Length: 264
Image (tube, rainbow, N blue to C red):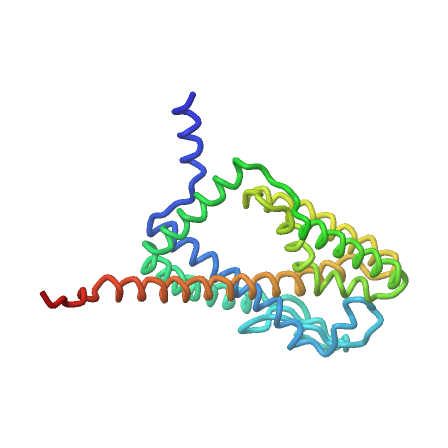
């Protein structure tokens, strides 16, 4: 029984081979480009007001580095719609970017494996203790619930609540998942998934009360959540890599320094 449990725990350990890190880098590059495509909506579109009011006469489009979708305000535009060729070009660009990230992952895989082992060890120790709410955690949760309740009450008949879900959704979800102490990261993923479905359902219901079409609400969630989540995940990863490189360089210098000479 002990051997079986140990084998199950080993199966859940993330892979540490060069192929695993290359795949993670490839996936990260594609996700980053997807986030850039979503965020390009705010640069290519005349106004985001159409996300909460379909009567706005604006031209919308998105795509990076090439435009993949266009919805023109004038009906005589022959370029409106989805461009599959441009989507293929963007995907190819994402694969190229992911290959660069994958090569970086392979180069620094030894340091990344150490960080991964430390992370798994810390979380396994935390999981055995169970989780609890600290006083600060309860205060943060109460403040978050009070702010959400006040927002719903004050802006129940206005599009501000829908805009708040578009542009503050990832922060709300992350706050809900990070408040409990001592919880394994896999349990936090479950909280994120459940809260995400609930928040999307709230956005769809509220958009329906405002008369905003379903596809318009889903577009707002896509361009808002995807761009924020992808870009912040990229920045956190870059910061982690920089910290790891600096730490390893400092340890190498300390290890190669010759001991001070002593006069006998």
